[in-house]
Length: 237
Image 1 (cartoon, rainbow, N blue to C red):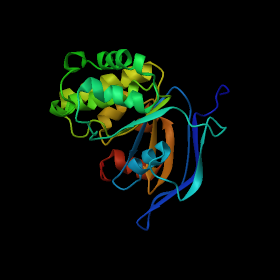
Image 2 (image 1 turned 90 degrees about the vertical axis):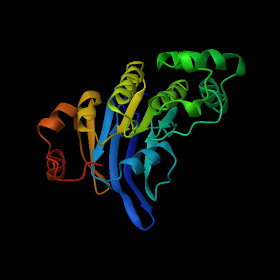
Image 3 (image 1 turned 135 degrees about the vertical axis):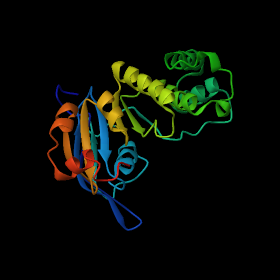
């Protein structure tokens, strides 16, 4: 990929679900190396955008280009309520590696390393489904991180967690970004957005009305919708 070339571009991205335009001609370019937080009111299209970029939702119109040449980046996605397999925490990560085609001889060591990086080594043998909500979310992050993705989509990963568990997840997200993975994350928590974001993408009615540096967005939002949102005059989720 040439210097300065976007990792991902969306052009005229439109998604119609149940007769509703969830995304409406959205344009977006994501350069490597940043942490992008996607903000917007309820129904703005945040989750649909992430699912579409990840490939879970097919666009009705428009295109998504990876690296400018059509090759999809290695990617992963973590949801607000991740699904845990009925097996140990370690086996959950190993299964993800197996699906990704990682050779069996290296799966366990790679899975244990991922668990260690998110602070879950001590529960490697415990059933994933009995872990706390915060531990399950960190396990989901370990499962994704073990895949060594170039880009990681996170859809409100702390929305259902208490402040302590949310802080642990934020720490892991920052570590994943520091290791070189491109982060694209939705949240309704403005404090979290300030802590984590390098840039903000603000969605309104299925369009990206702003894409700018985080400090500039919070100090001088350009669109009236973003200004209303920051003042609490639009719904936060």
